[in-house]
Length: 238
Image (tube, rainbow, N blue to C red):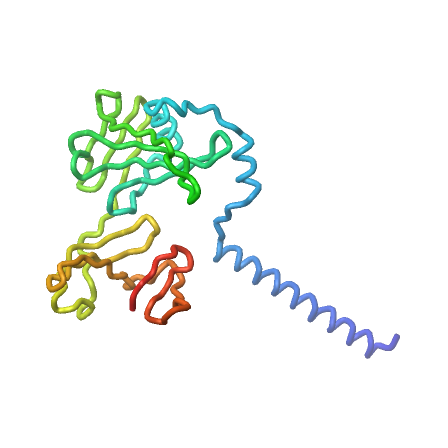
């Protein structure tokens, strides 16, 4: 082997090491900058197999089980003030919510419900529902204007309600006959402006695009005047 060939081989090996090393560094950079919150089939199967022994027929006890499973502070995004959750039990998926309703949360009350998750082919699902207050050993205390402490025995969870004060439609986005009512934050994470058309006497949801839309809107196959959200299935008239 000539010295020239050895030199070429050494340089090629060095370049290969640099390229591989750069690739590793780039991969590490992506892993650091772009973490992904994965929902895996493994976790789904194993959650089913755990078969938790839950007091499904006792609504009051189920509230304690749900509250104990929450972190110490949660954020309620929907403007209807429902805190939605779901869980697996008895081989099926359940959905539910805790609601701090504006009408009676300052009276120390909250609404709690859970039920088998709705299916298109199903119907007449049983809903477990209860309005809880201090008579049930549940205490709801207002800490701040949009912050509430829910206490059940020794367990305490703070519920931070979504603060949308000051949210206004961009200038020129409403028709002359439309009156702005207020912002809407849907549980789908889509934001709207609720407006009332005084000429036609109807309400409209106008898509709030000011902070970006967490969906992909694609034209309908019927007309490009209608956009369909790929994630939500919501239809928008343009």
